[in-house]
Amino acid sequence: MFSGSLSRQLVISMSAVALGVTLFIHISFYIFYAVAMEVNPAMVSSSPDAWPPTGPEWGWMIGVTLVGLLGAVYTASSLARRILQPLNSVADSVRRLAHGDLDVRAVAESGSLGETADLVHDFNTMAERLQRMSSDFSTWNAAIAHELRTPVTILRGRLQGLAEGVFAPDPVQFHSLLTQVEGLSRLIEDLRVLSLADSGHLSLQLEACDLAGEMRRAASLLEPELRAAGFRLHLQLEAVPVCCDVTRLRQVLLALLDNTRRYAQPGEITLRSKPAEGSFVFEIEDDGPGVPASLLPKLFDAFYRGEDSRSRASGGSGLGLAVARAVVEAHGGHIRCLPGSRGGALFQVSLPLAGPGSE
Image 1 (tube, one colour):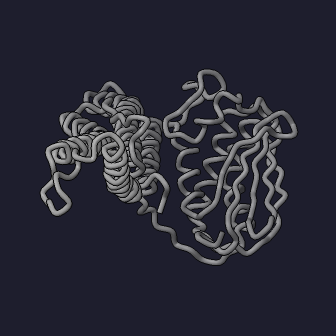
Image 2: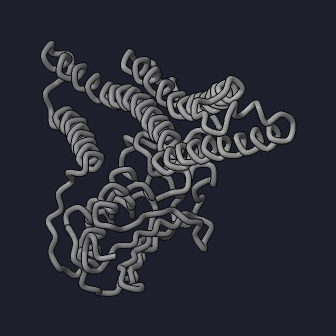
Image 3: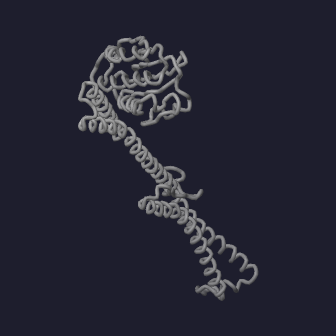
């Protein structure tokens, strides 16, 4: 039981009141009789055989009772105020929160008891999370609408042009339309993965595999595109059996490589993997310019882009790194971005060898 807990405080307060009143009565009567016997013994007894209290005794008993009652009332009122003030604050805040006021916060006085202070803290934490979720929901809606607007506008314009005979129905037009549809498909799939991850329902098809070999094959798929953009892919992969969802982790690798292709300067991209203390670690390092320190805290947030190196002109939906983090964390692993040894960015992914929950 904690020292500031409500039950302990109630026991201590009630015991203190009872002990205090009892001691006050005993001591006050001892003083009364000691003084009365010295000053005027007739104040306490009219005759040796008389049992009813005398007038001064009645007066003293009534006075002592009133003083003890006032002390108990004051102590009880103080204790009730310490209990009820935060509870009333929470109740009022709940009513305001129910009416849509997400800025409301409950208040606890400095002397509030343990459980009531914890209740206020938990309510404020809940209100802050609701406010943050509401803000994130609005941001997501705006970001999704923004990402969908461009491809949908292009598709509508091209289809309308084809329908009205403005554009000739040639392979170039169909390839352009297919590119926009593929972009929409990737966006929808990324949003689905993030939604499943946020709700805790991102399913994994775990199997023991040579992840390094799978990474080698996945990198070879993107290598022609990287080479066309001026990049050289250097592989340093050490074969280690890992229990994982190969398809999901292939998605992570391709997202990180695509992110490097979009934002790094042409040069060498190093992809390395190695075992490390019960984990499988793989890294992707480029030649620069790296990620500014101001961007690192939000680098893996959905729809987040910086104003310079991660500008809108570089393309992308802003979901790739968020999806990568969701998949890695679903495996029980960690992903982070560090300064590279060559002045660029170093993306590091650490996964438990035995799969989720093995750490």
